[in-house]
Image 1: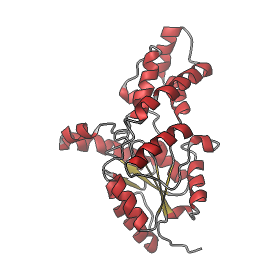
Image 2: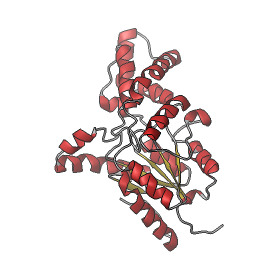
Image 3: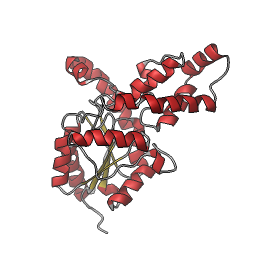
Image 4: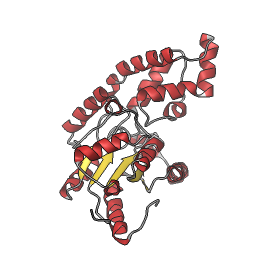
Length: 273
């Protein structure tokens, strides 16, 4: 096997990366679930563990001191595994009311996929959604011209992010190796760690992602100074987690791939801005 080879596959996250600008569907569903339980969540709290499997997202949210304390105050006991299961069961119902509305491809994603396929680059995907949720998102996105060659969910592997198993399943199904010929793209720290743990190039996206957490309209209304202040903090967070590249828009990925390919030929490493 050649030591220096070009990128042969890209593995994308779904919500906040290639569909659902701002990663709204899972956050709205999560906040609805906790609101019904009498424990309102702030947007920041709801987004704290985005990228994980949805059950783990709920479990870790319940473990946050501010949420756990509110739960104890209301129910006079600490949250239990049974509570996690009940909230998760409700989440699985509520989320589908949002998936149809929030599965539109982010700007530039359809064109990017076309560019990648023209270069012979395979397109895989991982997600924090269950298999049933991911199927609904993928079907809606395909109607809008966005489709992947492979989709792996936490249901298909022993554990979701930040473990690398979903990435490895993609690599096997796409028949691509070694890992350094694959780019993992996502919008959360758990996405970054998933890619790094798989030994792949890890790219984080800012504008459409959960960390920034704004709609397209809110993004256009943001001043240049406000945008710079907010994204610089997120950029450093991604880089500290090990992201090789952090890009504003998904449309910038082809430039990143060109840089990676050039770097591979020169024997260079990543962690760029």
